[in-house]
Image 1 (cartoon, helix red, strand yellow):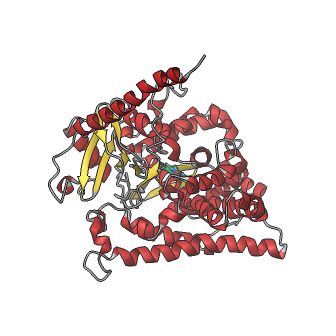
Image 2 (image 1 turned 135 degrees about the vertical axis):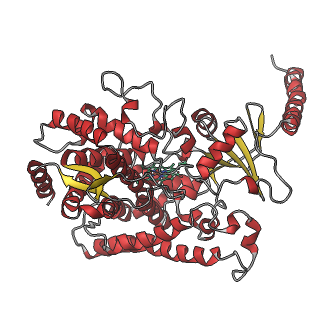
Image 3 (image 1 turned 180 degrees about the vertical axis):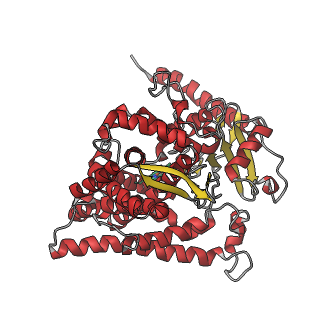
Length: 521
Ligand code: HEM
């Protein structure tokens, strides 16, 4: 029988234990040391250690090596920064402790925070109910289980790509841009764009081009000295205000106009292709009851365009670059394609299990050229202790995806493009090799929700290009001029312009290309 004394005897230890536990935790945090890193100076912190001459992620990886740590600490004026350099640390913190590592750093790139991207673009949104609403709406249309729903759209845009490559092979990068742009527009708005001059493509491109320019670390002084944001816009070094205003206006137009376009079509009763926009607009009342308003809809559809541009484009461009640098790898892939398809048809999603070399090419391209080398920075929501190191709440947490992809213990000779590293002696995918797909799409609760769609798109596009085209280095004075693997330094990393020759493999290949287009007419 429970009486007062029993309750007191149970509660007393808790009364004593809780403060003791709390204070010991607090004290131990105070006495714990921060992760290793270069000495920070008053006012400027580690500003002088900041790697600007080499790509940012490579500089961070070298600093980590220098300080013999996979968790590196850097201090900037007003900012604590922690860099995670191995798959293990990223997994232990961003995946396993995702409840406190899922917020985003809104101030990291000042033009982005000034343009109020964090209210519109899911990627930069604070962790919380509003972000969850966007993510849920996105997942209703694009997720592991729904990615297949877009296969027909994908096959159509890939057919257009093959025709464009046949007609104007030199401008292959414009065709890639159109491929991913028109896929995004068709999924989000049911809009078919068969030219790069499509008004909606132009609108989005304009906005993203400007936003991307500001993503090169060091572009704006204010990123290093956050106090500059409070100075008037005429003050030297504060030009980012004007830049941000431009991005903000372009962003508003890009996400609003296509939704208005679909709404007008629905209202006038014209037949339109079903899309995320049409489904949402037709179910506005139901969505409204779940708190999903027109702003959430516009933002979520807009991120479909932005996500594909930033990353899938880069990977496909890197694929062309890699093929132009290695005819042998291209021929090995084509041999496998020919043995499965006999040159009689184009490869499909359903062939993927029989095409491990294509799967390996997708993995190696993502590893060799990770399009988002430091992902998008996370923000730690409360103090944390990891392997005896203290990480303060509010810290900016960087997942150095590039360092993981270039870890020579996992990937010997990491600078070499070598899809065979993912295959076993029977030519099947070797599950003992670390899969870069597990890291290049980010981590934890903020992991890329477009990854399933992106991977299906990459498999199909790469398989169909290799089945129908040869990609060779450009010819300079009668000699092959192998393109250098040169990349921009932007946080959305892509190859610098390069030339290559794109030729149809045979008459039969050309026939397959045009037959496929006829199917989608
Ligand atoms: C090769 C292709 C792609 C790569 C490498 C990639 C990579 C990434 C990375 C690294 C992040 C940040 C994750 C983190 O914070 O830890 C991300 C976020 C995101 N990606 Fe992708 N992505 C790709 C394609 C796409 C596509 C095709 C879409 C849209 C259809 C998309 C939509 C998004 C969205 C909406 C987020 C924000 C998620 C959130 O904050 O909750 N991505 N992606």
